[in-house]
Length: 235
Image (cartoon, rainbow, N blue to C red):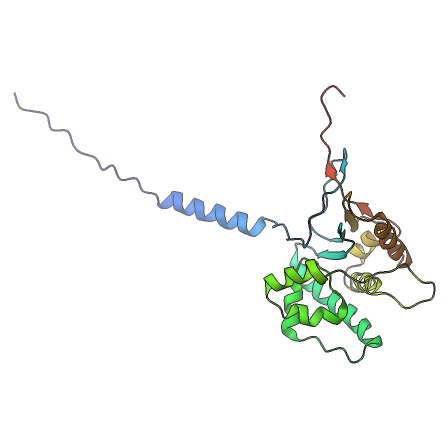
């Protein structure tokens, strides 16, 4: 009796379709993900039971460090046709620096490359006199400068006095939003578009000065940023 021959089949699996799906998923996550911006200092926010998320767009964050320094973070809209991060930051920079130069005419002009660099930066905070020099630095040098010599100059508001640098930035933000996006301007004035991030070690006196400056610029409402507190079981 003859042997039955079993036809051999190929064991090779065609992975083309799987590769296509993987590339599509990777592209999707790259385009839709929001990456966390690096902050110059670590601030441990106080816990709270509120689970309201902090907006990841259309938001201005005031960071108060434990060392008593103030920084700003500007986030525009994800929809680039509205007010993108880059456009928002560029317009705020131009407005703020133009106001600064009115009282400091000898300050150097901003270059195109410096303006472009600023548009990519999340959290910033240096005295205006050091701004152009800071923007010309390498990334690692900028981070070191923020930690050692950073911080936006701020002081308690003086009635009928000239704006300090923190107020200059706030006024620039308001001006840009008022002219470019009235809806975001309303959110800012209403308190939904701006928040203070301060830790338990951040000087309360400085937080008070920040709020005083915001009030002077007619920003009377704001969000106090906290971390989520997990309630104990049975309570």
